[in-house]
Length: 333
Image (cartoon, rainbow, N blue to C red):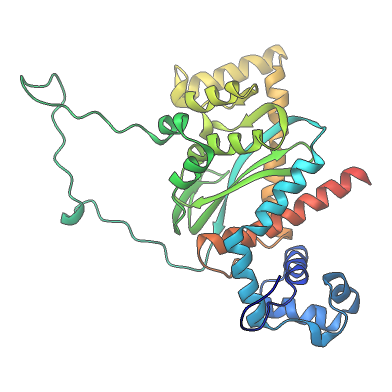
């Protein structure tokens, strides 16, 4: 490639390999990434540098990372790897889940409900409208709109700004964080298939249909496993439309009798020694939880030092790419 003016960019292949090394070794900063290849000859040569003087500067790493983020390089590499490795494979289960990603940036403020600039007309009273009164139709929910959208339209409709997220942990305590939320589809063998990064405030169910569409373009699977956060008729319909069998943990609001009815049914099944086949398959959903833990503990998702959706997603996808390669290598060895 010919360059008209200025210095040509340093070898981006070596820099991309270095960012994969950063995810594998769990290095928090770029300065530590530069230091390791400088003193480790074997690692330096794996990246593509022969001499310590060839290792790029921190400014070059920063510019290269910005280019990788704009072009979604790790995301495209991961997609190509999944399509190539699963070309002739039939995946049994796809486990869908989301995990919190803490970021070092301020959340984008939204307009307060009482702000005059965003004041909305008063709500009309319940009941039959008056004679001649025009009742505005309710705006369709995002899940309803997604039924008529393409994949690109669905992804662009999702909020991606830094925000405050809140969730209830396994012990029932409510926790909050500032940053984003990483949504993953994970295949058997703990292999990430698709990933989407949204604002922390986005509910898990809002990303289920885009993820399902993205995964269907990459692999062929039989079952979709989801927890109660995805219990929505639109999500179940989309899964069946793709030829899959959805296994979704029922939310108490969708069951007559609520939590008490669910608990009573579980006690009756245990007493009778009866286990549903769907319950046995649902246990495979722990793959998504294992992947979420490994991305944070082993592949750098706990150390997000960049800002902005594109760069944060690029950082995370280098970790997802490294994790995918690691799991594929375990399957063949």
